[in-house]
Image 1 (cartoon, rainbow, N blue to C red):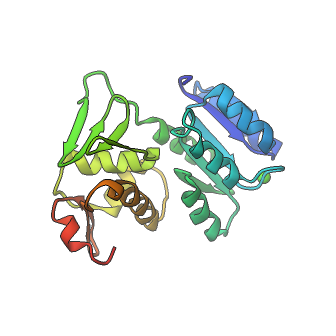
Image 2 (spheres, protein in one colour):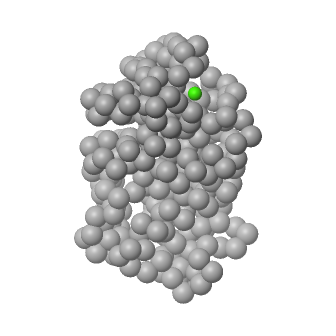
Image 3 (cartoon, rainbow, N blue to C red):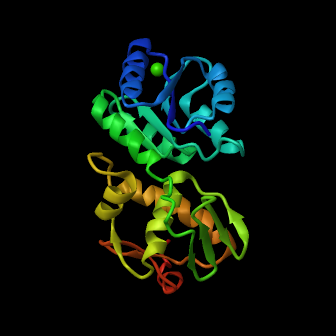
Length: 236
Ligand code: CA
């Protein structure tokens, strides 16, 4: 994967050029695509570190592109930031369900989008960092960025991976949605707290294929990873 490269898939040329200019100023390599069909070929060729993806595009929608990326083993871990039009609440949820890691509503400020790109790239581990996290039958390989449960590989999107990592670093500790938003999504970013719930739901779905539900919902507070989670989560 090319280091710190961003692919902008956006048919509004002025916006794409503005973003490219600002990202290049920050040292990123930037690719622009405006049409869906070409974009999917280019993602596989360029293997960008982050994709900024517009919802409305000619030929293929952002959601279709998102689903395509998530279905291809060589590119499925690339974080996707979706751009949606103002007021289209349902689009955000659809985008997240299709596998986007984050979304930004138009019109947005350039510094806000820059912050979100950085937050998606922040997951690379430092050389001296711990190599592995283990909680019961769940093992997280921090170098390969892979999660296993009873040695079954579990595919997680980048946001679910960071969420699980945070929980597994301190089992039993209850993290508030606000804390998770700040530390998983990053500073200076406005994300609604129900976004956390959407990603927790997705994380649970993937993890629970191979074992009990250890993610504990603490009513009106937040989430933790806890062996008692499985007993208490009747409502999930
Ligand atoms: Ca568009």
